[in-house]
Length: 190
Image 1 (cartoon, rainbow, N blue to C red):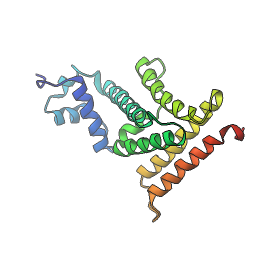
Image 2: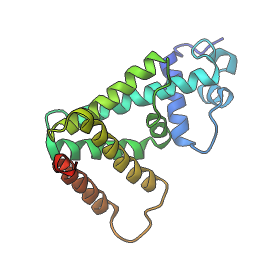
Image 3: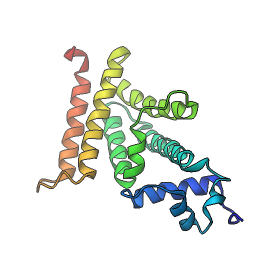
């Protein structure tokens, strides 16, 4: 019998926490059920097996990430928007490393929910970049540049690759300032 009050959202939230707390362990229904105090079969009332659970965790992660990035960039533009966006990006990725890994993948073809939430994420990047008067195909190129720069920094940082004595915060600030400078000069670079 399922635990009273157990909902799909609670199951997905618990799975999201679990992958961040134990990123080296494979997500399993048995482990999740144990952490929730239920038997594994009761989870099937809420998710379509482990693949369905992974999909829901991915959708949740992309949605939460989109919300955080939107909240950070609202009311700002240009370099200020980029700085707020980049800082929120880094903080969320550091706080949710395993979930973050799920957000960088392209949407699954034919998965309308994934396509919608991925479009929300891309739209935030486009809005931040548009504050530098970049549009058209240049917008796509600039979005790829911004995402690559931020993802590269965050991925290296969360992997423990920045062990040199220089302050990581200073390096991040300089990287974001360099990205802002590149975006400000984007039209001249072509």
